[in-house]
Image (cartoon, rainbow, N blue to C red):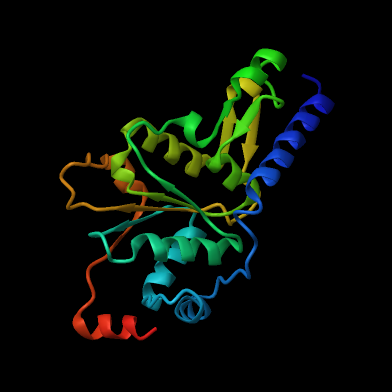
Length: 225
């Protein structure tokens, strides 16, 4: 593939991503000051979040590390994670609810069978999926209930996070993160015994933050928002 052909194919996929996902992930005012984010979360999102938690999450993002929110259901992990990713990147975050059959074709991209038959495995038949879209759009990704996924998928995510790139072998293309908005938050319910354990390699890589149910006074404050 010539340099010009590569460029056109690359731009075609980027254009396809924006055409598919831009409406569902509109831009918002970015907020990377923890104190301001604390106020915006309370006033706009009706979320009462400790400013120290915001500082820890933002520090992890600056260090290029993913964050793992651990806690029982109903503690606000998903809502808070999605809101923080959105404020950090300045665009509505992607939320991917995990399942054990997640693989690269479900989250990076696949090929339309009929178009692949007609055009071959190229940009014309390629269907970009959320993870690749988030990288191209420079926005955050929340992986909900990461323990429902298999270890191979977890390793795929860590490789993408570490190298900040996605390789699509069929296209002979490499996509790279263009900014600091492409960040990850995982959620997990460690009390759910039906889910698999996260590997030591995965846990060493993430910044772990524990969530618990609020005390009665805090709960009343949340209800007043």
